[in-house]
Image (spheres, rainbow, N blue to C red):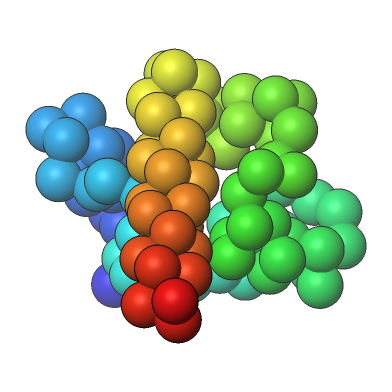
Length: 97
C-alpha cells in the first residue's frame, strides 16, 4: 500500500480515537518508514516504541507533523501506553505476593 495512503488512514484512526497507544501506530505503518522521516538512531527509536517515556517533546511534535495530527493527540497515545504499562507492572507485582 502506498505510504501516503497509510499515513492518511493512520491520521483518520488517530482522530477518531481508534488508536490508543503509541505502539499501535506501527500496526499500520512500517517502523522504518516513520524512523526515516524522524531521523536519529534506529536502535534508540525502537526503544522509544517500547518505552515512550524517553520520547522527547521535539520527537512528539515531529511525529505529529508527519502524521498530520496535533502533538496533543500523539502525547495522549504516549501517556496511554505509559499508564497501561504501569497497570501491567502493578498487576504482575500483586500476583507475585
